[in-house]
Length: 164
Image 1 (cartoon, rainbow, N blue to C red):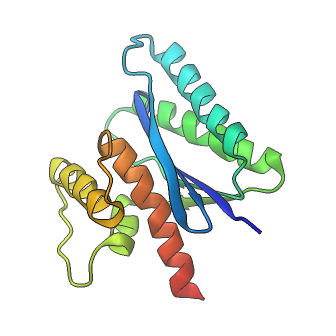
Image 2: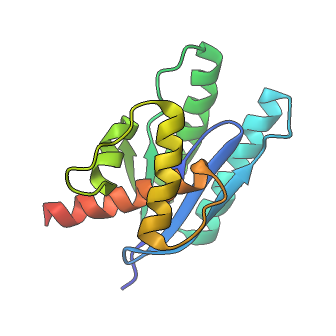
């Protein structure tokens, strides 16, 4: 039996995604809505893009980063709407386990090398994420959004393996 997992690093402009089968990364990418300036349309388009991926891959497990507490209430609402659509799909599908990771430091620890110092500043984290995805999977992620989705998925796999 094949276990399918879809991992997301969501935002209202660019959301990274990664698809795994039986713990092996198969493909990944970015849903890019950065050009859309109207935030209502952009969030709707992002929700459509993510649900299209959910329909395409029909995952057994959906892993997503919990929206961070940000300074802008408008941004938090947009992120919560996007995560809510993904969670709603998972619930309504009737067969997808929904897993949230929070904060990013939690999933980064699960993919870091033993005794590795994980950066704490946002820009340093983005660079670390891209380099870590390159190291683990020998791929060149399009950006930190894709790298984060890959690492979020791998973190869940590592967490599951550690629990067994």
